Image (cartoon, rainbow, N blue to C red; front, side):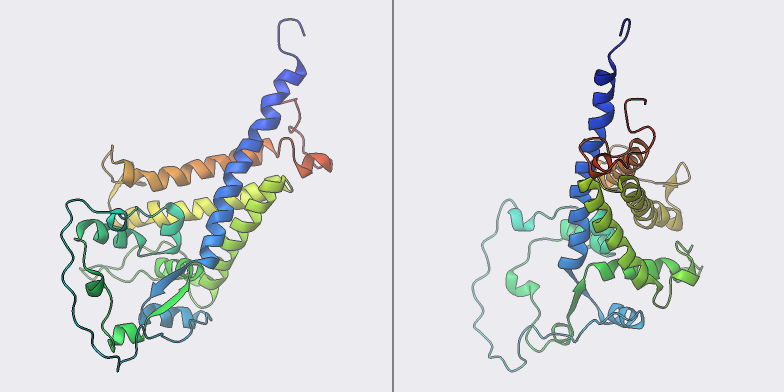
Length: 286
């Protein structure tokens, strides 16, 4: 074509750029969805009661050791270390981990501020009531707790009701459980659809919705609730604090990638294209 590129050269980027985005989104969200149903998180009795009210079977508390276990002789204290090893180097929680573990950020901060403790000091003593009532649940139910707490945030230290981040009508009863399950279905289902290039736009829109909810419940909403924002909606982090900005920027990147795939289509190769389901604009006319 005189004065321009050929149709085949123009279409190459349009057809294969979505494949790169699909791969990144599929890997990320399949991993995130599996993490919510495979990995577990500890909960206290209050959280267990809330989950039980949603219809979640939290099981019985498990004792770490029998109460009558004989006491062992205390060993020598560990030698001081000049630099923390890998076990004492906590990693900041990822956006997905923050979304399913309401206490992840606080736990990471506490770990950074605290000093390494001997293993014997970190474990509960035999017969300790806290050890006897320890419970663990799938991380998916941490998201249900987050939704419930967002709909019923209580009051601040001054007795003023906190801003609700979720409608109370769909944040109580069994609704948080339903939404948590829907998020996992969207993550796994959307990730698989994008990996196959099947119903790609539908899968991408589902993932975009998940990321909008994650940004609101994990970053923007809590910042507005606490009154610590810049530009009305952004968390008031230090401008160059990489660790603080990493979660919301990762969430924004995933959101933009999902929207881009929804606009561009599956590209090639994909089952949508093989089955002739590619919509207008999926070819070299873009």
